[in-house]
Image (cartoon, rainbow, N blue to C red; front, side, top):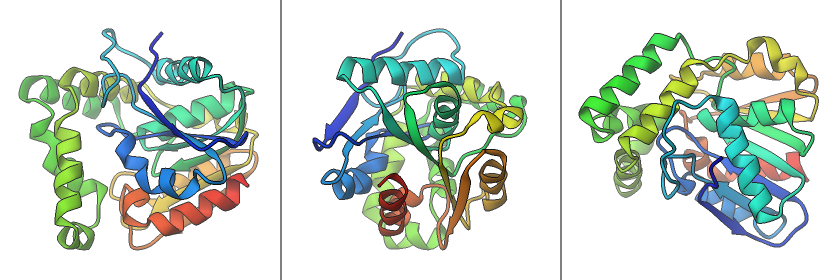
Length: 250
């Protein structure tokens, strides 16, 4: 059991829970927290071993990460909620939407039912432990954002690169190992709540067709694609993301 670091704004009975990517903190959701707190209670969490959440030793599964979220929401007194997840957070959100009757609606952003073959994640975990998360941060940021956005936003680029580099290497590596064993391909049909998927047209990690598979596989899915945008449209296309989320969870 892990109680995660969280931030919470707003007082609505309609609660939205935001779960970010590998190597992220709640900062990944700042534009959404600012825009949506007037109409929703918005809560963002740091995965175990990320941001201000403690490292929990032992290799987790995505199911373990999902239980962290539920335990944290219990601690905050939240019963039912809409869930929004990006990348790793999208895997956690898929699991929650399929297995918890507390989830009312879901949005999956730049994520997948399976993130490639396990060996790549085991290799990344090993590299992180050997060389530190800072050794991966530049390459991560180049996947997260389109080249034009990076060129036009140098201060934000520096901030998010530092965010990745500041993630504890063991926390990052353990979550890589969780992704290595993640495969929800044959369980998408268990998700019956309304689902919105959001893809970045220029995302090299989870391209639009990957999100379309999820939208087609769940019982009630709708797919949207934002362009130009790469892997983190919450920062690159915040207005469009905020509008889509407000409409979906209203």
